[in-house]
Length: 333
Image (cartoon, rainbow, N blue to C red; front, side, top):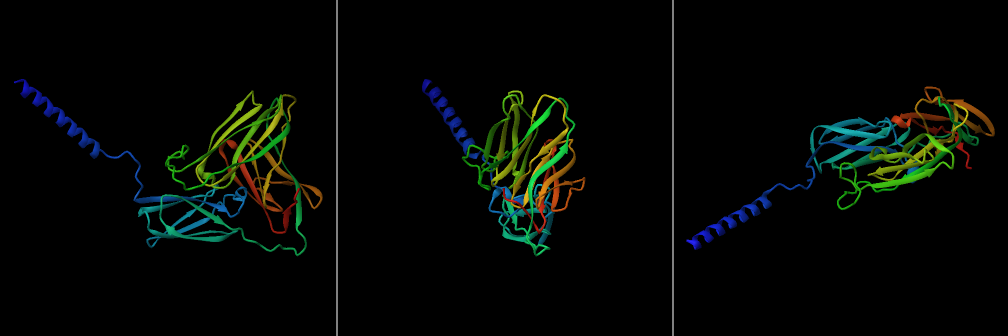
């Protein structure tokens, strides 16, 4: 009787073990599988330059893609981002061709295969002949002037500093310790602390992405410490190298002053600056062939020697970028 009981218990144990092994080998994998077809693809259109700081976004570029005999159209937004949406799923690996056009740039032609990736498109600027055959008109000593209703503080200086967030795009995350928010791509993080000086404080801080694949970055934090004397920033980038511009007013508690002066960043033939929320009456002061002139921008951002565009940047304000017209050049300092 005892032997039968032991045999029965052994059989039960063996059955449980077999069932466990079966469940282990038949349960679905929790690992992320690659998609076999896509409903859309995304990318970014940038100015072609070997210097990442000069790879400004190209807005309103026309994108035409041909996939399996079907044409798909899109336009880039103010940050250069575009999305091609397919009416039905497109199988990964299918051949495609893409044409990207903009009136101010040479067109770009791309061919390849549909894939789950970020598409990078660089457009070379059109080299236009200057209207005049004489020397270029030199622009120097640039200042941005605007007004902001601020009470109880006076600005004593302007702080401006560019940061590069170096990374390589389209690298699968796999074993990397830092990844994009969706876990697909390897990412890089920039963490910096800047100091306004003893007794001073940062005000009207603007942190803007001005070059590179900006749609694939995120400002993780932007915190005041030591009563605003110091500023900590953290930026995550999960595509190619991007350039951020940090601008702020350095203030002391004293009499009111609502007039502000800032100094734009100049990379190649493009100047960039950010107007804080609530700013009014922006103008650019510049030395043109040795003469100081004030150029009011107005609501349409009209500038005699440049073509300017404005991009809303949420609580950061408005990012203004101006490209020089033919016949003009920034004076090397």
